[in-house]
Length: 374
Image 1 (cartoon, helix red, strand yellow):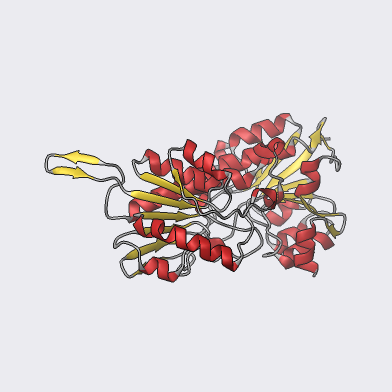
Image 2 (image 1 turned 180 degrees about the vertical axis):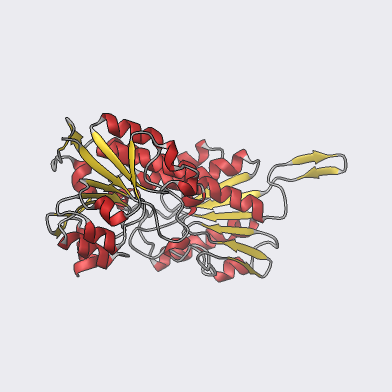
């Protein structure tokens, strides 16, 4: 008997991605899966229903999921959809339980086995399943383009008949996947690039991309590949070093985010007030409130002569490739769950165990359990 997979159409504002693309649907069919999709699920990324082969379409999402073994989505589904899922079904999507407490409780109470894509462990073996990284790489690329299109000058050096134009300076703060991709893209566009991160091991990565690394003498390595939050003394020390680099830059891109917590403030109002006229800040951490004290999430604002761009859900702006990468991340995770054309969850597998949010009527992730249940 085949495994029935249901793919939902995204309904949240400004979400253009879809959890399935034709190439991945074909591979899932070879695993023994029967693919059902909600009509129009791929329309936002110019993937009409006709682009999918061997896929059955349905208009009603509740009917679609009612007998599905696995439900795939990008954003967490609505309470109505979760309520229509059968007990013991599997959900794969981003969830962020600290923001979705009621939905997480519903998943628990409905005995849905939910694998939250943001919980996939950041280990070498799970890199092909790491949707946070695949989406962050696209966000970093786009951040450099946003900087370039919001500044009233060009990024590369240019020699003309009337003289030479100096290259722009770009500072990237936070050298995770998004930050490193932003550095690489800004440099390809011709900008001089500098990178800053509180984790000193990122220096070598920044320099390998042709960037200068801003040394502050503060080490803030945390667990799971993320930076820990700095003490006030450390923040003051960092600020004294970083301020001059911020105020010399034409473009500043910030990417620092701490899962489940507000984005750390890397740029103060005073630092912005001292920036060069015409400079631009692109704040990729707007989802968590932003890395800049002036940031207004989802808006582009002017503060004096400085432009602050704070887009939300940046990967969705590159919906075609974001969907392709995300669908492949989910495929690689599903390959751990489907064996011999049947579901087979191996709870001894580190990836399966750590990516699990809810199962058998309980919240399995300790951080989520604390956030939701207290």
